[in-house]
Amino acid sequence: MPIEVSASLTRRTFVQTAISGLAGCGCMAGRRAGAAEIAPEPSLRIRGVVMVPETLTWKDWPDRARRAGLNTISLHHPTSPRKLLEFVRTEAGQEFLARCKNQELHVEFDFHAMRDLVPRGLFAKDRSLFRTNDSGTRTPDQNFCVHSATAMRTAVENALAFARALRPTTERYYYWSDGCASWCRCSRCRELSDSDQALLVENAIVKALRSEKPVAQVAHLACHVTMPPPKTIKPEAGVFLQFAPARRRYDLPYSQQRSKDETDSLWYLERNLEVFPAATAQALEYWLDVSRFSRGKKLPLPWDRNRVRADLGTYRALGIQHIKSFANDLDAEYVRRHGEPTFLAEYGAALAELFDP
Ligand SMILES: [Zn+2]
Image (tube, rainbow, N blue to C red; front, side, top):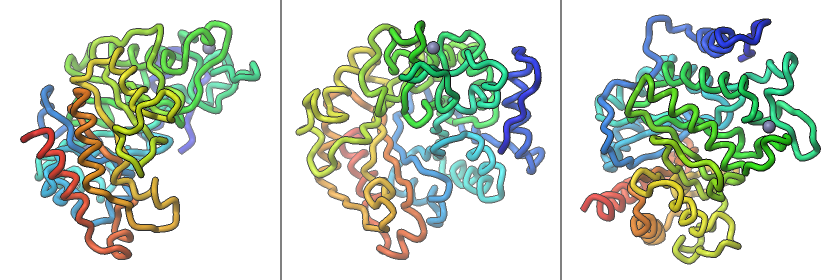
């Protein structure tokens, strides 16, 4: 959807930028877009799956998740929260939310957001809002300049607008960097790591959100360039670690990947846990993610029950209490090709056995 950008760069204009874009897909006028139908529980321990809405072609996903003992389904989009907003306003989206409510399942929304929080159309008016790349050039390709007060204010206002439109029942909010990719290298930003720059944004968002919702929490996603812990910026109250080791090895137990030299190893989780509380930290894993392992070849998931149980034990030993796994492409076509999977139930059973005995 094209983003309408008004002529003046005022605070009011930025809010309208997000709202007008959201309103543009409001074909189901009067319907609630969000999912805040069951009360948030600050003590809730997340046991969940994360998927793009297209995965919901597997009939009765909420019922299946509940039967597996899970308590949360997170909807995901790889580039824009607007797509999720469009989905929850469709008949299928409304039915999904109703099913989750009936099954007392929590609903969250995990998405890469910075392109929408600072709309790219603003680049033509003021390049200083956007990041400087390694070549010293301002570019709207991803993320923004965290030392631009206007960009930061715009991001916060639009984050609030999305929070009002897409309402997680857990009061946990996920605004990820674009593509888990680099932030700004301008003269003022370059002293801060990508993790520090992301945390600056998350801190600003959580402070604003908590002025409206005192129990709101905002994720700091450790993934790709933000896998190392922040070094300079400290997390505000309400910012929690979400650790997504997308590039780790899955043919070995995670406990055997502890070296700093191994990509996305446990070393990075342990360093992040020196900055973020373990009690609120969340592992975002890929055990059930058909799309990650299949890579378009429609292969069966390489599920190893014992390996996943071992990995869960590794996370538990580090104090992690919140667990989600991507489950993209575990859809109707997958079940047609490979039959009814047993691994969803085994995943839920392992979580219950190891975390809630
Ligand atoms: Zn900058």
